[in-house]
Image 1 (spheres, rainbow, N blue to C red):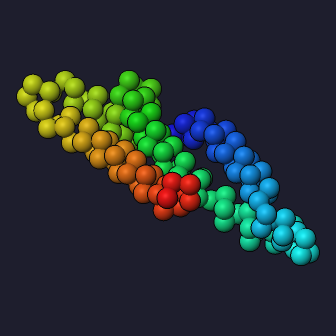
Image 2: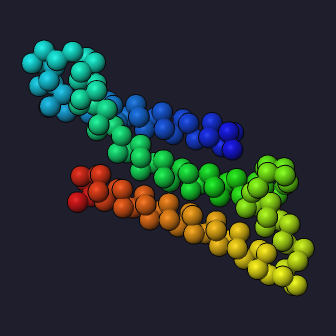
Length: 135
């Protein structure tokens, strides 16, 4: 899971940098600078609050993708080892019993589906609430 997080880190860094550069060019930041605001105050009061919404929206999408990636790797035997609980390893273990006990694969699969769907709906809701361009 750490490797998946490290792999997703450049996306967040690039998004944060681009958002900061876009917000720094806004008129209210230039007005705060013209009024003598310190760089720390401008950063905390003007730039940081406007940088967080895109990062929150991206984080819900990235968490959903990380859950799918971890489940896929665990299903293939490349993720967490069996003592650690993982939906992918549960699906892999249930694969042998599909004809006798299909619910062993049904519940982990439904859990993955429900969590990823909930995170995507959360992302859409956050985008509608926090992104002024989509209003």
